[in-house]
Length: 114
Ligand SMILES: [Zn+2]
Image 1 (cartoon, rainbow, N blue to C red):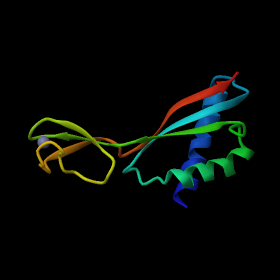
Image 2: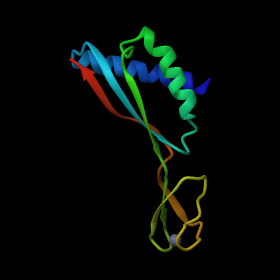
Image 3: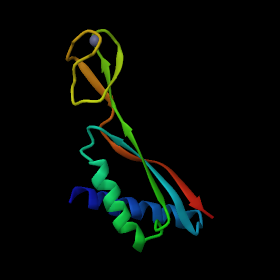
Image 4: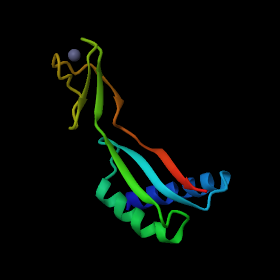
């Protein structure tokens, strides 16, 4: 499953960061999940809860911030946030837009237990 491999690389990232900062553990992991990232938040948190027990994240709380799609219109220059898969500018209806956010998943914040 896609989410499992994401969580495994996330755990590796957490472990190396904890090691780097000589932390005893990790209290909180905050992720940004773009609605176009292809990541299913429910599956991701399920995978996290399963895998964390074996890792430095075993006490960590997972916080998911869902990032809407942000479109920058090249025609009218409006920036709009949408919660669906679209490339249509909500201001002028143009499809000449650029996706500036909402496509990726990233680690926003890690609270270390030191
Ligand atoms: Zn527009």
